[in-house]
Image (tube, rainbow, N blue to C red; front, top):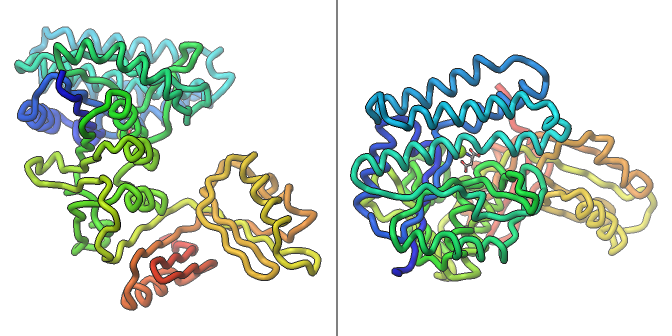
Amino acid sequence: MIQPLVFKFGGASIKDAASIKNVAQLVKKRWTNSLVLVVSAAGNTTDRLEEVIELSLKEKRYDKELLELLTYHEDLCRSLFSPEHPIFTRVDNHFAQLRRLLETDTLKAEEGFFYDQIIGYGELISTRILQEYLCETGNPCIWQDARELVRTDSTTRMARVDWALTMQHCRRILIPKLEQFPVITQGFIGTDLLGNTTTLGREGSDFTAAILGVSLGASAVTIWKDVAGILNGDPDIFPDAVKFDYLDFEEAAEMTYYGAKVIHPKTIKPLAKHGIPLYVKSFLNPEMAGTVIGSFGQAPRIPITIFKNNLTLIDLRIRDLSMVGGFHFECIYEVAKKANWRIQLVQASAAHLRVLIQDMPVSDEQLTRPFRDVFQVQIRRQLKMITVKNPTDAEVKHYRQVAEKCYLEQKSPELVQWVYEPEYP
Ligand code: ASP
Ligand code: MG
């Protein structure tokens, strides 16, 4: 068998019938057995399902929202298939299952578990539609339930992958199929050891593509996006943003850590470990080169600007007159580890420590309590951070003004960061 190739398509690439036709066209041009397509939910289905879940948990009515989702998918199908095509029954069946799950109150005892059982229906349905459409238009491919492939622990909403088991399942299940036909499967979902559906975190389909790529020893993974590749700034904010042709794994991983949204943060590490290149290409312009992420070493030192939202600053002043030392760091890291903080930045001066983490759904009181004996604590939430790599004086001047209400500045020759309170209109 030729080495597998993994393509990932996000919700925007299949949001309507024209987009699905475009994806089909793109895939057909690159058709080979041993092609694995990893697909997200169509359009913003996942957001809509989150609303339905929320309503259901609050014991409120969600019929209207669910009907809108059904209509959206039926409309998609009506534009792609003849009225007697079996896809209509399939979609109806998925919605019937969905409704049944939403009505099963016993599932609601643990909200995260309830969420995981429902949220992946967007992917289950979208992959059915795309598979049927490809088959119908002369490109037979096999629909595969990703839950048979991606095995995880039972952490809800953000399950951790059991790599050994996943690799085993991928090879056993996928390789014989790929010898015959391309396979289409869902991003984002997996199963735990008890057979319950789990999810990999929002926007987790990129990560699924990496998991399957690594498990199959793919020659490359390609993420098809609505941007030309990875740029050095958000094109909505910087019209003259420059695309990288090549980017080193390390640099790309750093960019996602600072908040770049092009690729899911967990995607790069496994691919780098196995030396599998990651292509980021535009589904609107598939012939264009895009960006290749691989082992290239340092990228050219051009300025890169990245914004990140939803951050919490924990400001800790030592109560007695002792200066910052190992004890204080130990105290912080112990709490951080236990509470699973996603640390973004730590800054220390003589008697003052600042820890920036991603916002968490816990109260100020919960965040403050473990530190009160040693520190005076202040919490600031909903902050924003600007990171500029390889900054020039012009960038520093410009962003220092953007971050007008700045609570933290961190500077080194290759990096400047500002954490600030964004102004809400
Ligand atoms: N559909 C899921 C989400 O929107 C997974 C993904 O798109 O990557 O979060
Ligand atoms: Mg999505």
